[in-house]
Length: 487
Ligand code: AMP
Ligand code: MG
Image (cartoon, rainbow, N blue to C red; front, side, top):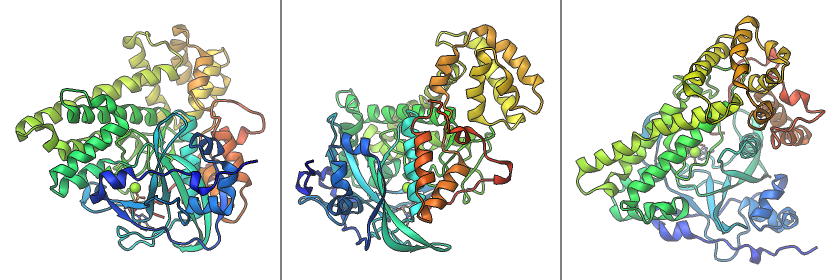
């Protein structure tokens, strides 16, 4: 077996080179006793990284940032952000480092980034560290999202550092190695804009076009085309979240990417009982980032992006505002089209199905699910059984099955394709009680529940014997679920 030496890992420093005003070089803090908890071997292969080498002391050094190839420049990235609506001009990576960019097997440039690698100049009062539980949460949920076909940053590995992190209690520390198309955020543009440096804003936009939306480069107005491309990518992404019942939990502008990938899994969770008012984050008192608000919040965040980009859109501010407004007007119809097409697929109906028939059926269905507190994931999966002629499983989800009987009686004549439904409606999602179970076992040193949960959620559509409990809703005593971010 040949094992890659560190010198074979080629890390570019393109972000730091092209946007030095937004990059502060910083080494990672030492990890006294690094121990690999999880490694995504398939992702390592995509990146051209040898999994056996990543498990070696030198490889672990890369995964915690203490050993970097010659020429690499780990940097903390600067960005601003609207957090729960309030603007912070200087947030940046308080506990993260961009190690650099690598070129994957398909020729795409990907960021290799660490979270929990120590304090940076952006750390403010924070300790710069992360605990095993929250880093494994990101590993689990990002893996599930990827398996569901939803654009997301990826998790290459979680390494326990051997350092103790102090939160409400003493916890084992960890570093997450994250891979992303880039870490450019709406907040990155806000940062460049508030510096007042027009050249920086332009270089940032050029960098974003080159990395994510190259089709914008030859457009008549490349920066307007960039804005439109981000709006389109986010409209599609948020529709995907809504269709699968994902609640991000902290959709601040610094947690929304330019690439259209989901980023920053903090107080996130998947819906169980369908209810637009569902909130999981313990700090979201007003419900700003409730499940049902996500499309409106995304549109609000994109308006902040458009504002930041105004000087790029036109020399005349009124003209720039008019162009930005027109671009933002594209969000709702694109979101609606993506969501409606996705919902038709969830119901097993063809693209050409008559919207005049389908739309009211969908509205009534969502009202039934909400009134009955019906488990979102179980519903769509068992509905396929009803499509095959066995309404038993779906009826059992309703205290009063009469209403769903009447609905199914109107849906079945549309000739839904039950097998196609099973290919788009997951059986296994990272249910909150199972995530908690896996994280608390892992924190105590037992990785078996984590591995079993990963086995279920990384093949979400494929029913497999022995995984029944991964398809079932939380037991009633699990109670109102809350997650905590910034930990
Ligand atoms: P997040 O809620 O994870 O998106 O983080 C919001 C901001 O707080 C970012 O600037 C993070 O880098 C920073 N941050 C979160 N946790 C810590 C920590 N433990 N130490 C330093 N900075 C942190
Ligand atoms: Mg963040």
